[in-house]
Image 1 (tube, rainbow, N blue to C red):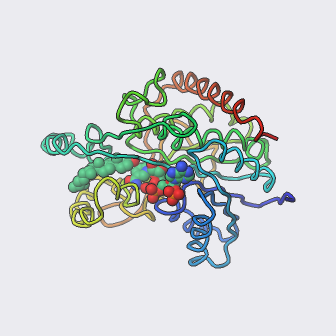
Image 2 (cartoon, rainbow, N blue to C red):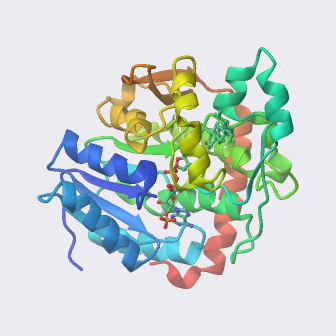
Length: 337
Ligand SMILES: NC(=O)C1=CN([C@@H]2O[C@H](COP(=O)(O)OP(=O)(O)OC[C@H]3O[C@@H](n4cnc5c(N)ncnc54)[C@H](OP(=O)(O)O)[C@@H]3O)[C@@H](O)[C@H]2O)C=CC1
Ligand SMILES: CC(C)CCC[C@@H](C)[C@H]1CC[C@H]2C3=C(CC[C@]12C)[C@@]1(C)CCC(=O)[C@@H](C)[C@@H]1CC3
């Protein structure tokens, strides 16, 4: 396949629904000339997603690539294809994420409602959510592999398209306000032992973004993290059934007057992603997470909040990711150029 030089090559992961699909549409509203490359798990999903985007933006340039982040061979194959197709990528939105077997501790939720930290609990889910994780086909913890390591491998494999271009390239990771240092440990960075694999993987995402900035800013690659806020999507519909969320909707609109991260719709949730698209990366703070917010009256805006990350831990974690990457590349050496 011949190489094509794209003005704005933008790769979006995790866009077949929810925040990712809204993001694709909003990016096209910002600039209809961009070339979007969407990465889906299989051909049917790719085609269906492409059709959904073309239904609202018929003139858009949308290409697809197949990639399952929970399968490292698939990530390596997709990266090889992208290296053939593109000479540079201006943005990669690392948005795919899973929260398998979510469990809400309603007793803790009830107790929390009576304390002064109720808003903190309702916006971060601290102390009220757990998950059950499992090993995937690569022998990695599934949540760590999908939410972080698959994305990390992809970025490393696409380094030649991202570094040393005349214009900076950007990584935008969808993290979460559920990311918490206490859920993460360097000695168990895949979170095999605990029950907060989602929180751990999102904290690991924040650490990775911080360290990538330290390593690659001088080569023109910049990384940022965002939180879309609480959004009604397939992920939240697995936490409580749809009908219950619908019943709770008036309460959530009320909560939104106090908790601005209750963005609730995928469109509102993509606010920070779109805002970052328009910013000069040199002026962004790599230790800040950009939160999509929606006011009680429905106005969307972005709030930067300092992250609770230690740069030394970020560096140590990066070394561990590099070790795991080396093992992966040894295992799949036949998939490399
Ligand atoms: N909803 C919320 O309240 C919040 C969400 N987030 C984060 O926002 C991001 C988007 O989530 P949201 O839109 O809400 O949820 P959805 O479940 O709607 O979307 C998740 C996306 O990730 C993709 N995905 C999941 N597993 C894989 C995999 N193995 N390989 C490739 N793609 C995969 C899904 O693709 P497929 O269609 O193939 O399953 C889908 O496009 C996630 O990272 C999530 O953690 C953060 C804070 C709050
Ligand atoms: C708001 C209602 C009256 C009661 C809903 C109770 C819980 C189901 C929610 C309260 C806080 C929510 C929350 C999330 C999931 C649903 C709750 C636990 C997330 C963990 C979803 C994914 C994320 O990434 C976080 C930012 C969310 C934090 C808040």
